[in-house]
Structure formats: C-alpha cells, structure tokens
Image (cartoon, rainbow, N blue to C red; front, side, top):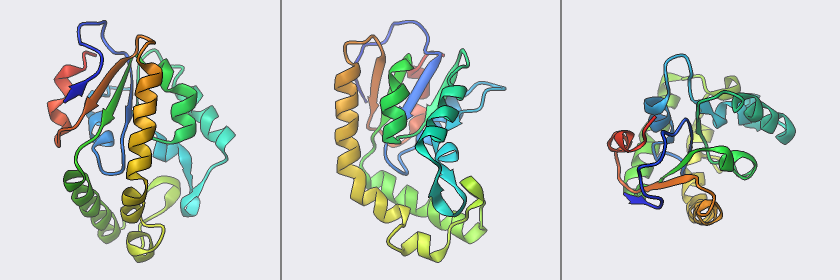
Length: 183
C-alpha cells in the first residue's frame, strides 16, 4: 500500500475508486457501500445497449444526480467523470495491483460472464467477439494500462493539495484495504 495522505482525518463519506479493468474497484465499492446506498457504478451509467456509450452530457448528468447524496461510493475510471467530479470526494482510492493479479482476474470474470450469459449494462452480454475480438475488455485492459496509470498519477498530483485523502493500493486483495478507509 502506498498511501499518499496520512490517515487520521475525518471519516470518508464520499469515496471515489479508480483503477484499470479487473483491479478490484467494484469489489471494494461493494464492501464500502452502506445499506440502502449501493455504489455508483460508472459502467452502468456509461454503457447503453450494444456496448454503445450514452451521450457524455447524459452520462455526466446521471453522475451529478447520484452525487447529490450525503454519502456515496463511486466505482469507475471514465476520464470525463473523473475530471468533472473526483475532486468532490473525501477520499480517492487508486486500486493498482500488478498486471499478474488483475489480468487473470479479468480473464476469469469475462469468461464467466460469457459462459453464464450474464446481463451487463444496457442489457448487453459478452459474446465470443467481445471476449476475444478487437473490442475485448481483455485487450483493452492491456492497451490502456499505461495511459490509465499516468492519468491516475496526474489525478493524485492535482488533488494532493486539496485535502482529499489519496490512497494508492498495490496489493491484490482489496478486502485488506477496507479497514483503512473510515466510513
């Protein structure tokens, strides 16, 4: 764990979790969410039918509506959303496990979703083409890894003087992080 801001501040009522595909964002968000307040899943707000992104203004408006709550946990790395709202969090967590941890996890999850025909955002399902084709999340994760890491370094640099608590977690199991984020 590489915590940027030291612990000891007030409890984090508003937590934003960033990181690449398969890193554990959704798992951590689920663990931090409170009863009656499910995590805000950016994938669910971003993707429409047939893996088509919704218009950006609609996407950002849905996020803004979700962030009107007194307490929230956001799970997602979409650049427009992070740029517009991450600074409103009390705590930003960057889940950054090694590729040897995140990529096999992503592979297992993607294959499970394909085999079980799990319905995803916008009513979509994984197909053989989305598992191994050029738009596969598996290839995407490899392609954007360096770019997302640089974006998160830049995000942490921008937020470092704002009072937002910043945590970079490089471990493999996000359950080890839950106790470090006072809610």
